[in-house]
Length: 530
Ligand SMILES: Cc1cc2nc3c(=O)[nH]c(=O)nc-3n(C[C@H](O)[C@H](O)[C@H](O)COP(=O)(O)OP(=O)(O)OC[C@H]3O[C@@H](n4cnc5c(N)ncnc54)[C@H](O)[C@@H]3O)c2cc1C
Image 1 (cartoon, rainbow, N blue to C red):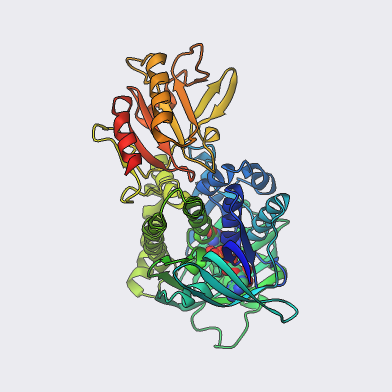
Image 2: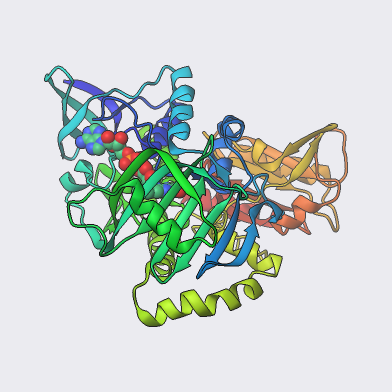
């Protein structure tokens, strides 16, 4: 029987991201997919700011940026009248290098991840299907079916189901997938269009339904709409169905032709009752499915993988006991639940058939929306949720802050990014943080600046007490002989809330493990010994 540490079932975006995390942790694993080839049809079309930050922990965000485009705006029309336009390019967050969503197809994303993994000699094994999976106290046994019909038994320490909504891992682990299907049927078409308009997301609302029109590459546009009655149960959608909807909803005539892909699908909103059952875990669509409103499904799956990767590695290396994996469920299931609630509300608003809601959507919203979104702060707030920059794990049992800490950032929050100077070279906070290990940041403070001797002492004491090789970076406001990272304007200090000196222990997924003033470093040491 073959053996490995982790079996990843499913080579979609979630499985690929987990493969990347485990590769950077040097953990032996195998990744399999039942499909003989990768699909060239794209479901997701957007990478959000936080996902780009997470990819950049591996130094690869630029490869996605080079093959995508940041020029995303949304225009909303109701009853064939223009209501409102929101330009994502003018959102100005002060704590990230990735201000805007990146338009890039899921097929392209998967292909880049494949290429990156190939550089590490990692390849998704396909077609290989996980047919049976069971676990006992010491490991997991999987029965895999290969292309030639042969059967293989594989023994591993953990199995992760990144195998989509029908997950065999989730079902074999006895986890429930709570929720239901939305009543509507959805139809999707990627088509060419003759259309003089800005290349951006268009949303059309009207008495006959709604239509989302999204720019892809090379003059191809994605059309998505819901149709409750028009199509019979078995009827396949046609180009004419879409043309008919466009004629009803758009203020001007447009012509669609040369479809690349036409499909119909049913949407579900479901979440696993636990993301972990012993040695079997689920991530991505195997753990949660929801409406694509907000474009977050794939992004969230990739974030699940990042959260899980370093924890699995730490447990497998024996640095932490197995209970660390419970925090994966605690942290990520809460995110999944919030996402389900948010997308449900948005979806109900978009796809409603309730006459009262329809009236509000089609007649009241056109008046309120331009007013509500006129203020840049409100627009930024709306994208903040979608961008997933605001995700935090404050209620997690594995994060914390010093009792003396009064700052607004807390344990579990995402580490903000900002610009620093290393000598004369501009660097960012995130460029200091590793994807493999925790990192400790020491800040001098901007008011009564702590002496470099005190910072050096804190550094040395931490290394001695932690007994682990955790990289430590000291950031000062003014230059000094032996400290090379500077925050001359004090902007990064302020982002973290360090007017006085302080410290932050950062997890490999870029979230704060523990934060406090430098005078409370003892609390960090006690916390690490728990
Ligand atoms: C119309 C539509 C539009 C969307 N738009 C967006 C968007 O704009 N933004 C966004 O973030 N998300 C979007 N999503 C959601 C996104 O596509 C999914 O969330 C994403 O694909 C989930 O990735 P995954 O890797 O978890 O699962 P999947 O992509 O489903 O991959 C699962 C893989 O597991 C394999 N597999 C299954 N069973 C087995 C088995 N027994 N053995 C081996 N392999 C197996 C499958 O072959 C598959 O390759 C959209 C979805 C739809 C339907």
